[in-house]
Image (tube, rainbow, N blue to C red; front, side):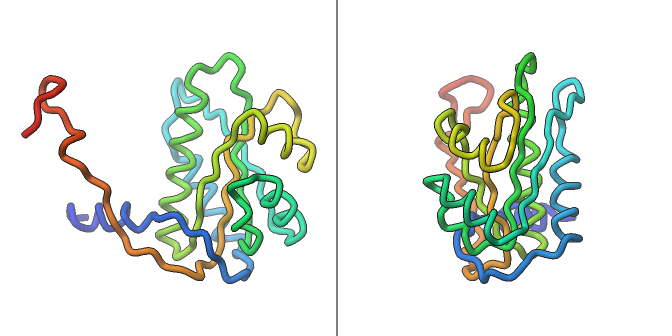
Length: 171
C-alpha cells in the first residue's frame, strides 16, 4: 500500500449523521466488531465488550436518550462499546483505539458512523434502557448505517501542532 493509499483509507473516515434507514447486514457488523477487537490494548487486557442494537425501536430509544445522538434514529444499527474500567488505568485509551478501528472499518465498508461520547450523566440515562450493570462504563453510542450523506475525505493536518526534537521546534 502506498502512502497515498494509506491516507485515503484513513481520511475516508468522516462523521456521518444522515442515514437512509436501511438495515446493516449482520456480516458487516461482525467485520466492524472484528476490526474493533483487533485494536491494541495495554497488557492485552482487551477491556471491551460490545452491545449491538438492530431493532428500530431500541435504536430510537437509545439515540433520543443521548443529547448528541438524536441524528442516529435513522441508523441501521447502533454499536455500544462498554466495559469495566475499575482497576484498569488504560481503559479509556484501549476503548478509544477499538472505536477508531471500528470507525475506519465502517468508512471503508461504505457505511457511515459517528462516535457519540459518554459522561456520567449520560450513563444514568442509558444504563437502564439496556440493562447494563452499574459497574460497566458505556464508552460511546455509535450509530452506524448506510449513509445518506457523503462528506469529502480530508485531513486536518496542522504543521504548527507538530514539534520536532524539542517542544516549540517546527520545521
